[in-house]
Image (cartoon, rainbow, N blue to C red):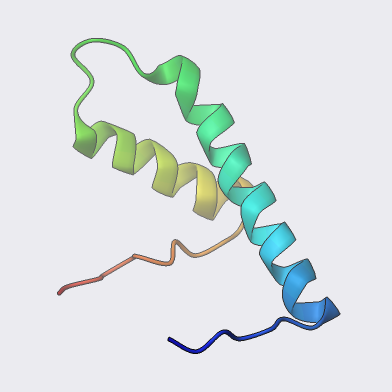
Length: 64
């Protein structure tokens, strides 16, 4: 396995991505209750990411 070293811009990009992911989890945490489906959680996360953060989910449309 090859180790790829990040430059300052790469590290900053990772920092931004981590912060955005953290914000989504902070938003979702109080909404998770018994009875909520994974589809509901997916929709909530998608809506938050696209409407609040103005980002595109990385796994959108992913198929193995």
